Structures are given as structure tokens and as C-alpha cells.
Image (cartoon, rainbow, N blue to C red):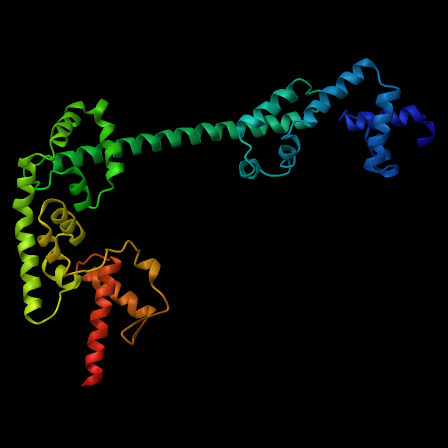
Length: 345
């Protein structure tokens, strides 16, 4: 068969082979057996420049524009995968249904040249496009759910904040007291302007006069008994020639120490704030307890293993105390002191 082929015939067969034209199986077998892929490509280029008709040149240009599309080869490499695996593979490379659709439109113009590629990309795009729609629907449902939760959270917050039983009507202090992210809650409340304008306005009316004498008076009616109890604890310890620590504070008082200190500092004479410093003389730490547990901590010559430290964290939780770094360290100091006493007995 090879003897019947002229040079031009070989080149044309190679050209059509590269164009993905349907060739007789015996011709494809001949090219595969006699020539390497590089040689076939070189022969096709020789045909292009020396023998190709205007129509063949046009076909070549169309195919070239497809091959040069940046995602063509990446997409076609998934041809032997399942559609599900192909979608995952392409998504991991930042290729979604939109890029696949662009390639499909290019292939559609010359699907007679590349029928297999066209059929595959069409199947792939149909699959990915349907999944994209489903994902959008799921995402929209999720966004709607989050929006609803956001609104409900703001409404619940405002009703409690405006309740006559709420003694802390200073917004920032109220958020800190209840462990609420103030910025996040502010964004939630803003969303009520359109969905619940009456409740939003009720909040704004109180918020705008939060620093009124009436609100400050209400706050101090609530804070004064707590402050007096803290003062009593300090005096009890001073009678023994000692200073209390944060464990002593939280054994007797539930109100957060940092918040009480902040209120007294801001609204009371300096000497009243100094009484509270007896519980903790240094600046309050912002360290996270769990991030600062180490293989071993030494306090006054007493070592605490990682397990000992985790036991202290559990003790704080069981006794309703905040798991803050300062409270954690005060408990360790107490344990070290107890162990030192036992050594001297």
C-alpha cells in the first residue's frame, strides 16, 4: 500500500490526520507504524505550505485557533475521566462551566473537523452547567438562611437590650458583658432598617442617648453592690496581710472583672479603681490559654506538666470561671503555693 502513495499523498494523509479528519483505518495504521508523531506533524506542515488549498488553509486556521485556546488541552486531558472527576479536576485548576462553554462555542463552528472533541466538551459543559445551577441554588438558599439568622439575631438582641430589666444600656458595655462581637452585631442591626424599621428606630432612640444621666445612674445601681462586694474581699485579705487574686474574685463575683475595672476606671474616682487593682496588679493579658500550654511551666520552683495545665483548664470550666490566661496563671500560682507548703510540713 505504501508504494501506491506519492509524497504529496503521504503529506496530505498526515495533514488530515492532524486535522482530525476521518481517515481509513489502514491509512491511520500506516502513519502510526511508519512515522513518529513529530514526523507526522512535520509532514502536515509541509503539505500546508506546499500543497494545501484555500479551503484546507481555512480549516487549519480554525483548528489552530481552537488548539491555541488556553484551556483546550487542559479540558481535553479529562476526556478519559468520568464527568464527575473531570469537573473536580478542572475546578481545582480554576476552570468552570463558563470557560468550558467558550471552548464549546469555538468547537461548534468546526465540529465537522473535531467531532469527538465537540461531543465530549458538549457533554462536559451540560454536566458542569447543571451542577453550577444546583450549586448556585444551594448557595442562594444558604445566603437566604444566613440573612434570616442575621435578622433574627439582631431582633433578639434589641428586644433584650431594650428590656426594662436590662441594667446596662450602654451598647459597647452591654455587648462586652454578654460576650457579643459588637461590630458583627452592629452589621446585623443595620440590616433591620428595611425589614423591621420600627424595631431598628427603637434601638436608635435608646442608643443615641445611652450616655444620659438616667442610663449611667441605672448602670451604677447595678454595679455598686458588685463593687462593694469586691471591696469587702480586698479588706478581708488585707486583714491577713495578703492581696486577693482573680480566683478569689470569681469565687465570689460572677460579673466579669475586666468589665468592672473598665466601668470604674471610666466613671469613678481614681482611688476606687485602685481597690480593684488588688486582684490583679499588672495589665490584663490577651493571650489565649490553649495556645500557651507548654510541655512544662515552672512557678516558684514547682513544675506543672502539660497534663497538669489541662487539668487546671478543666477546673476553671467546672467552677464557672473564665478560661482566661490571667485566671489560669493565678490558679497555677495557688497550686504552686500549696505544694510549697506541703514540702515544708
